[in-house]
Amino acid sequence: MEQNIIVNNQYIGRFAPSPTGRLHIGSLLCAVGSFLDARANNGKWLVRIEDLDPPREEIGATDDILRTLHAFALHWDGEVVYQSKRHHLYREALDYLLEKGEVYPCFCSRKTIKENGIIGIDGMVYNGNCRKQSNFQSAGKNPAYRLYVDADEISFNDSIIGCYKQNIKNEVGDFILLRADGLWAYQLAVVVDDAMQKVNHIVRGQDLLVSTPRQIYLAKRLHYPAIQYAHLPLLTNRQGQKWSKQTLAPHLDLNHKEDLLRQVLIYLGLPQPIPADSCENILRWAVANWNIKQVPVNSIISEN
Ligand code: GLU
View: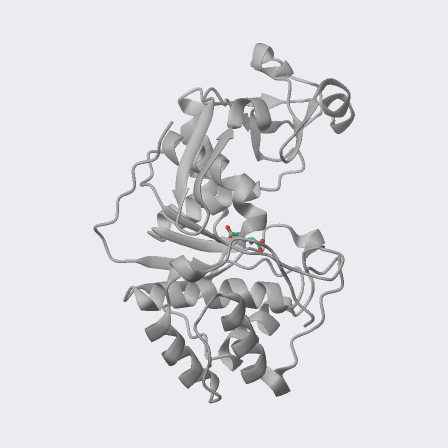
């Protein structure tokens, strides 16, 4: 299944952090990359806080993220959107798919999924056990809801990586939209929000590349317009692990924010020398010099 890109409306991009911790050099790179691509295309740049998984969130992280974006002069358009206030939109989308017979309840436990599934590109591939039992009710147990996946190959043209293909049926299988514990799955929320916010360009980290075919497939099921994607290189520690909260990414030292910003621009392939100036002026220069084709594909070791 090929994607048709619709590009005739105004560019709308976004940065969508989860408030699981403070921004680090890797998330700063994603914020800056998505900001520059939007601004260089005279586009809007939105910020959405993806706060749908309270157990994984850190108190104060949202404020910290927004303050940090401001400190780097990454000024967004409009109001910040919070996923925690948008449950009704995810419910509407799920109800629509339920009505069309595109999703089914799944009562399988983690254990049976592990025992019966095979390992795919992003965890276990579900074996479709509950497909056959759509009227089955398991007493006292809330089901998860899964989307029927009947497409084989999904391919799209990434602005940085080029053509990316995934056999979504074999490598992912029917995926969850609503978890048995009542939490909305990232895949559903992100697709619904991007469509509702009219986002038509997504620039984000390569850790999410494996999710993109699922999101394209789901967006099609919901008749949402296609999106142009660009996946940025990952920043890693010396061991090649992506910087994250788990790999103890160092906090951004705002006393050296101009140096950090210049460093990120080098990682993003901007021409050197990068001016030594305020963040505001460095970003202005970077917008004028931005070329997404210069962004490297491979991961980069970063000391920060
Ligand atoms: N909230 C996701 C994260 O912080 C990013 C979602 C996205 O950009 O699609 O990893």
